[in-house]
Length: 111
Image (cartoon, rainbow, N blue to C red):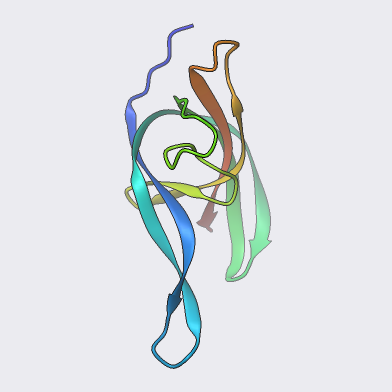
């Protein structure tokens, strides 16, 4: 099956950063750029921290990377495509040869 990896995505992870006053805050750190195939699945309305949000599920296919490699996406990381952010919920091999990974993701947009 042919894959169309036409979206350039930045893989990011959450890190704790010292705030200079003995505490810390969270920030997103770029791990690198991957090419992916982004396809919508389903959507719903939900209540977020700042009010009503539209949550759309996406299936994002990327080239496989070995377990433990920094280029392999993990749940709780995210993909960024410009201003769009896709939170990664799960990652699994997409084909028997393990050439691609299927990432199930959510994008939240304030409504």
